[in-house]
Image (cartoon, rainbow, N blue to C red):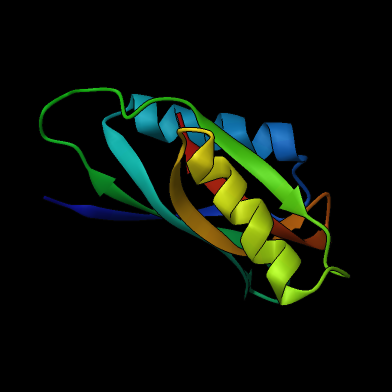
Length: 109
């Protein structure tokens, strides 16, 4: 099973970021983590994918912005809400959305 690292532009909107991730997943991969970084001095997002050998679709993802000013407990509560709603938690990290650092939870239906 292979691992693939993708750099996704830091100036993408949340919707465009989701579209890029889904395009990679439709090509036989599954998102494992999403985090921010810098490449050549430019803000970028790093998405880590694992190859799916069975050809299945892992399902739709949601990228949920979490306000930075909230307490740790409020962040945990928002993350728990997704799981209680029947979603599978994938990743939670600060990423660049429209060039602004944003806390984003990634979960899947």
